[in-house]
Every structure is written in C-alpha cells, then in structure tokens.
Length: 559
Image 1 (cartoon, rainbow, N blue to C red):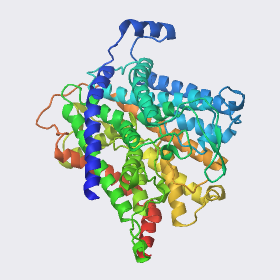
Image 2: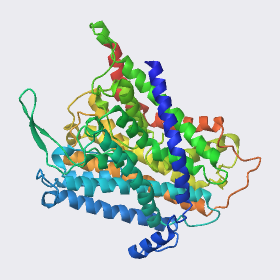
Image 3: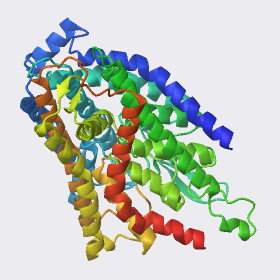
C-alpha cells in the first residue's frame, strides 16, 4: 500500500504542475492589467459606469468591501424570501434569520460553512442564483487581492494597484467561468446530475419508500472546487454519488481545488527576476503538503490496532469513507481540502483516527497557506515570507528586504496583525463555546472528542474553510452568530492589512541586488519559511490540540 500511496501523491502533483503552469502564465497577463479584448472590455466598462483609472490601495479595498457587502445583502434577501421565489419545486420555506445570516456570511467570505442539509433546506433558485453566484464572486475577490499584492511587489514607485472592478470582471469572465463550464460538462459525462426536475419518489428493492433529491448539481460542483468554496449541493457533499460519482471525478475535484492556488505561484514568478520566487513558494507548499498527506495516510492505514486483538482481519480505518474511493484517496482529499480553504469532503473527518483528524485541523490552523484558497493561499504564504525575511534579517544583521523592496516597521505591523487574526478567533471562540451553556448544548459527544469537534468547527470558520467534524449541532442562534463573526473577521481581517501592505510596497523603489541582499529562493530559505509556518502554528495551537486529538490518541494507545 505504501507504493500505491506514493504513486498517487506523485501522480497528483505531476498533473497539477503540468496544468497549473500554462494557467499561471495566463494569470500573469491579467496581473499585468492589459486588456485581452480592448473593444469589448471598453464597451463593458462604459455600460457599467466603471472608471478606467487605476486605484490606490484604500480605493481598491473600498471597492472590494462594497462589492462583497452588496453580494451579502442580495444573498441574505434570497435566503429569507426563498419560499416566495421561483424554482422551488419542493416548496421549501425561507431560512430562519440566524441561519440565513450565517449562510450569507459563509458564502460571501468563501467559507461555505453549512449548518443545514442542502437538499432539505435550500431551493434550486437559492442554490443557483444565490450560493453558486457567490462561489464565483468570493473566489474572484480572493484572486483580486492576490493580484493587488503582486503588483505591490512589482511596481516601481507607482502608488496604484490596478482597478478592482476590472480585475473582478476579468477573473470571473476569463478564468472562473470557462474553466467551470468545462469541468461541469465533464462531471455530467461521468454521472453528476444537472436538472430542474422535482425530487423523485421511488420504491427500493426492500419495498421501502424513498425520496431521491435532484437538482442542478454539476454546475455548482465545478465552481465549488475550482474556487475553493466547498459548499455542497447535498448534505454529505462530495461523498454523494450525484456530486462525485467516480474515482475519476474524485481525482479531477482534487486537482480543481489546487489548480488556481498553484497557478498563482507560477504567475507570481512571471514578474521580471521573480521566477525563482514562485518556485520557492511551490517547493515550500509541496513539501508541507506531502508530509501532511503521508501522516494522514499512515494514521488511517494503521487504524485502531486494538481491532486486531479483538479478532479483526485488519486495523485499517474505513469508517466514514466511501468504498469507491478507499483509504488513500479519502486521506489525500482530506488534506487537499483543508490545506486549501475549500471545505468539500468525500469522507467524514470526524470518523478519522485522532491523528488522522488532527492533521487536517492543524492545516486549517496554519492559515491554510499550503497552496490555500484561491488568492488567499498566495497572499497568506507571502505574509509568512515577509515574517521569515524579517527573522532572517534579525539573525544575520541584514536589512529585511524581499524582491527589492525593503520591509519596514509598517509592513511588519500589518503582517503580525494579519497572522494573529485567525489564531485569536480560534482560541477565544473555542473558549467562549466551552464556557457557555449555549455553546456546550450543541455538543453530542462530551469529553475529549467533543472538544475536538468544537475546536475544529471554530478553526474551520475562522480560516474560511467550511468543513466540519460531525457531532456538533451548529444550527442554533449561538453557533450561527459565533461562527458567522469568525468567518467575517477571519476573511476581511486579513484582507485589510494585506491591502495595506500592498499599498505600502507599491510606492517603494526596487533596490538593486547587492552583497547584503538575502537570497530568498534557495533550500536554506525554503527551510526557514517552512520552519516559520510550522513554528507559528505549533506555538499557537499545540496546547489546544493537546486537549483534543493528542489526548484522544493517547487514550487509543492505552486501549
């Protein structure tokens, strides 16, 4: 099985890099802010009333915040009034105010946390015109922020970062829509459904009556993966055969999650003299990714050794996994979806072993910078690059500098603020949930595993992931409001300082490389970057993890 595991990992990374490189070159053209269809774009800007000039960072940020605020209001209204809107063959009522608020925040922030069962709660119209639309727009927002930061590094004393409206439009029309269309058609060819027909009542072979949920699934499935959104049409997400019918669709879904995050690293390397910087980011991300996959696969294959003592044929942990995917594909999917801010699942993470479940949880807590979400993974990792450069400068007495831009006190303050946002939300949010009756009321599993479920849920919300351990009943006003707050601050509490850093870097002159310049592309800096990411994660979360999955693993060893 070890050979199969390494072949699967190697095949996945090989195909990913082959697909991501040309897409990265195309994304670099969009970063350069050159119109691909000048006449068509010019007419579109005039029709929409978009001004042509580039924006400084406060105006760019304001445009993004306004854009997302309008999307939030539109989605909230759609969910509340769902019962009176068309394409609702099951006559599903509108959502409660707290669930609608939580869901609207969730999809606008690219989290896609779902405190409901999709097939029993949300109509076809809400799925398409509400949730799927926000899958596109929230993904475009993350990529636009990454574009702005890349321009901040590349600009030569130029205060502007491009035009937010142009970026959002081009990203949606030139990248997300065409790729999603191709992927959706592929899913349909493999057996995913795409229909407006009402749910189908049938009689099983045993004579029981069953309702078969239907709907426009493939179109939402494509963008939920490509945009690292993760919100499934059905309650069991990508474990459902209508969403993920075959091993081939499963492989394509995993590739879709990492495709744009990897391509953005190649795009970052397209700047003059920065090719090695893009490769450095890919090496650091890939090393951490492989280590995480190996750890989860080992934990799940090892399973529960006490089963052997009880006479079982194998200790392998197949609980909560689909037989059509098996141990290796389920483990790989779990790492991919939590390393990226996707949250889609093809197996129940709550049923993983203690260590197998801890690794995905820790990947989220690291800030989801191991490839990460579309845009968010790149600018999140670049924050750690700036921190690593600053640490190296303190160690060897060199001026902190990256890609010719000096890193001053302002950039470090903003970097520290952005890095500390999500740990603060996770630790304080988990403490609040455990201290209050309303928080503990949602726990179906008391004790160590129940704490792990709470810690996982808050980590998922604060880091804009959206996956969950089962066993936590989160559809209550307390949990909807707590997790909604964590999702909102966890998204924009990082975007705001990142945009401030981009604006500060944009006006700085690019310094020529000299004897005092720290190389930021070799194995030594890659090791420093990985160490920085892991050290921040370890110092922040190991005490909390020790109370949950680590303690649970020690209990397993003791039988």
